[in-house]
Length: 362
Image (tube, rainbow, N blue to C red; front, side):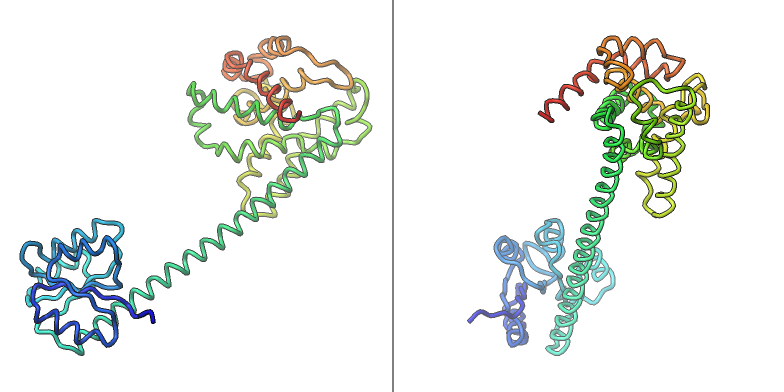
């Protein structure tokens, strides 16, 4: 039959103390005795007790040296230690506590005191372990709920972005491609130390994910305009331009309904500002230069490049090289010149991103 009692290691160089301690404790615990600290440490490589009763003054290796060895080893650092000592000085007691001892029992040993101190120490350890287990369970619950909320957020966001793509069927995989372009620009900006301070304030994974909502305002644009098989009239174009403000309003409504709005902050910036122009002639606000948020300036390049290389009802797709030249020609006009310099250095990566996405689809 297995002995389920807790195991206590008793360490003392005195055979009298070892015999006495065993006789007092063995009715309640499994007691293993050692006459040296070195033998204790060797045994701990195979067995872990619930408590160590440790003589402070032993030849070869003192109790202070033993507890230092215990606490320096992650495998034994958590084992509670009660010192056995014939000393009665405050300095030794404080030193032992500083080294990690739980308690002191003075010699000569009183059986009732020994039993009570051991009982209290083991109760405290059990309560501590119970608290640790409780906290771990709470952490697991929080992690599961967080995961569930993130998954729900992702599903809602992806559903909304796909709704836009299904309505505006000319744009194809526009959302996936612009997300890939933005990632390329982010990576290049970090390598080249461009807008480092602003970029450091952006949580890149959230921003990339949120970029999928940049055209969500198109949900509010009528089909007669969104799906028109030809060039828009000036009046129709004015109505189409409202999709930026509509997008901002939709996301602002979502932000007001949740306390965890970090990714929606990014989404709102993408939606509102991706049609602003460096020279102030964009919409909806006519912001100019660095008054336009960085994410808006980045999305502007990704959005226009993808529009140029994609087929629309009113135009054919342009080759990559021609799209690059058009965008370079708008440096300082539609686009941030510093970002356009970067774009010119890595524009082939944009083209490669398209091929990779097409390959994954096929």
